Length: 151
Image (tube, rainbow, N blue to C red; front, side, top):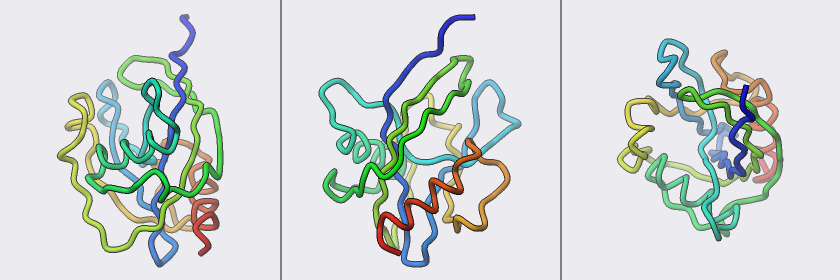
């Protein structure tokens, strides 16, 4: 079995006034019957800082513009190994939090491979998260995001 594709990623966890976090709901195109909730974010591009990558990914995946200096963190770091679209991937994930209220999510900026695979978005309390999570540490990542923005 080949080694996984290793990527450094910036993940953004928006937090609203109620202490809920914004997650995306999507699926692996190779396993469409197993959708899951996940954090906003993706791989850094050459020459890009983690905060710049987080800001760019936030705009691409949600249509919400935030400046790199609006992001708090990184407040957490974790390695997440998974399979997506037939690729074995190992993300070195750096998590940022950002306070956001009264925003509208748009999927108009998704990359071609994400179109039709990012299905929805929703606000979740770290204490009441859905069962279909991309990673078992997501409730703790969400709790830390809420704390990082001072709620």
